[in-house]
Amino acid sequence: MTQDALQGSGAAMRMRAVTAAAIGTALEWFDFTLYGALAATVLPKLFFPKMDPTSALLASLATFGVGLAARPLGAVICGHLGDKLGRRNLMLGTVTVMGMSSMLMGLLPTYASIGVWAPMLLVMLRILQGFALGGESTGAQLMAIEHASADRRGKYSGLLGLCSPLSQIMANGVLLLLSSTMSASAFDEYGWRIPFVLSFVLVIVGVYIRLKVSETPSFVEMRKTEVVHVGSPLRDALRLHWRTVLRWMLFFCGPAAIFYLIVVFSLSYITKTLAVPKQTGYLLLMGANVCAIVGALAGGMLSDKIGRKKALAIGSIATLLMLFVYFQILDTKAFIPMLAAMGLFLGFTQFQSGIQPVAFAEAFPTNVRYSGSALAYTGANLIAGGPMPVLAVWLFAVCNGSPWGVVAVCVGFNLISLIMILTARETRGIDMNRTDSAAALAGDDGFTPAMNNGHRM
Image (cartoon, rainbow, N blue to C red; front, side, top):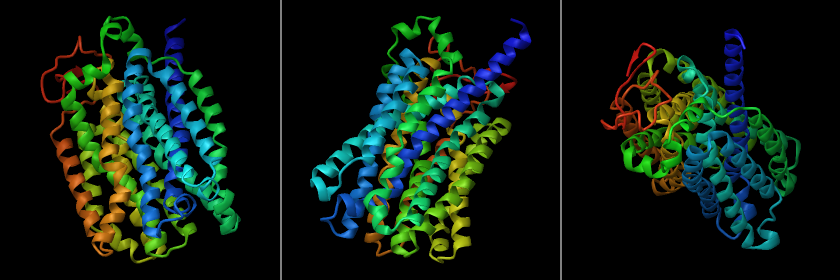
């Protein structure tokens, strides 16, 4: 095979890898996001009808948090296996588990039919969803980033960062369509089930596209050493790279908390506290997520130009400033200002999420990359992301409807995130094929600076 043919084949595989990762992850996030929107609107009265409205909302949002709480378990198990068996094999399993649990959720009887078993089964299926997403999120990121060339890792990272807002648009668009074309009683009875039941498409599409992708070059290179055979990725990540895990987990607490504040709690706040119609709430979230797609792509591409650290700091500072005006603008109940506030807030948040995949991947050597990245990513969602909607409801009640309690908590998360960014090392262009046997373990980030592609680390 000629050199040009080899380069063409490599480029085709890189594009296939990022496409498979992006589409598969977007499909998985669709079901996970769909539940978040319904947890704030429909599910409280269907699965928790014996509670007062506030308690039912808290209970419903808590089931959303249960899914996030299950993500670290999925991250730990899938991360360990992914570092031992390969990225591609784990991706086939996670997409199947997510699709099947979501389809079963759409067929689940409500409290009126089977009583307390309904919320119990709902929680079990949420745990399966969370487990699958815990393994999926990091695995898909590594599948794309490890296939990418050094000068385009940020671009590929931004493409992965748009999966979440794209799923938000898809989920809220489906709900808007169904709620607009069906009566309220019909939507509550069976309309909300339709997107979940159609999740078998997720399984078919997800498995098909991932069968077309080869194992990543970094993992293939590592297989030539003894590291993959003798190492324990989870143990090594915690023993040798705990500072790196802790740093990036604390960083992502900021974006995670604010993301779920916007996409889950804001919908409840808009429709219940401000009495804005559900259709308007769905439309606002869809518009905001268009801005989030732009933000994710911009963040990833900018990080290729100026470095991960500087780009992350820009997004973090912008998000911090938005915190102080967000709820005041929502309280105007004027559509355009609300759309602008939600769009900018979510856009700057996803600006950071567009950089997160590549920043996390570059922070760890190959033999613990899946385990370390997954622990940091899901740990942040467990600490800050999952509890935020419930915490926001409680703080609003405690503060007699004032938003400043929620703002104070989010400012705290954001400041911690910013500190982690400013004290981190730059990793743009670092060698992605290094393992613990090739990387010194000095410094607070678990590896020494390197020289690669003209960038000083």
